[in-house]
Length: 151
Length: 151
DNA sequence: CTCCATTCATTGGTGCGACCAACATTAACA
DNA sequence: TGTTAATGTTGGTCGCACCAATGAATGGAG
Image (cartoon, each protein chain N blue to C red):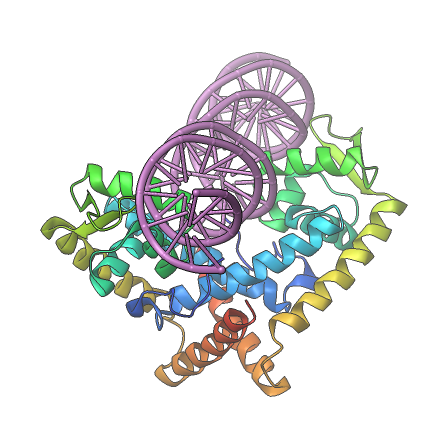
């Protein structure tokens, strides 16, 4: 389960990497559980969101836009296509590519997942005031941006 | 790879769960890489640290003190024992238990890993000022504690 | 003191996320 | 044209978290 109570080695209690991992693990549990209840997982949401944002895309583009490995994109798309949330068709102008399109069902499913996600944010940040939430988001954004640039 | 650049669906860019995951993924990559270079992984460090802190312990106690599932404790201890970092001996006063002890080598290895970890913290928080680091640690600690109590 | 529930170590799974290597096909370019 | 690069796909690996079941051993309730 992993809590931060007695079960955390003392030297780790204040190590940022540990704290981040703890909170991340918790958020991951929340996401996994709620998404599973909706018949989805993280990769699905990311892909659907990218499709909704950028419109029909090749699989390679999807990988780039979501940070998901090409090979994992294949697997996740198979799952999404099996559920009719997404459609794959060959790109006539480049026969290497598939054009992946969001279906109406996929769109609907994405909205669901968005609601689920919003609920999770609230639960995750429950103990923080609105100002503190802003602070946290700001700090994390800076960390993320910094490390994103670095590679 | 996963950066926060163009490759992040817009609706996720400001979702705390996403940010936390991004930063966590980055920290995880750092930890995994550096620990692997030292021949270890996260579970190893946690177990060694718990042993150093609480002294010789049963495997169940180790699981409790580290938040690692009992079954995973077994596997990780096998690896540590194979490297002579840890020793398993039957508890004479309770024959169900093993008493796990940190060896001198284990102690040395733990110190190494501690240095590695310290370096990672610096790198992870590089873009933040000392005050901001305190802020972040404080906020994360509150989140971790909150969610730890809740279960 | 006996029976039952609990604890313990262990085995063997599952799932998710993140990676990597290799391959055939197709495009782009020098 | 010949070579380099991109694309989709297959088939792995690893780390972390978690679950179910089992046999051995213990402790507590009656």
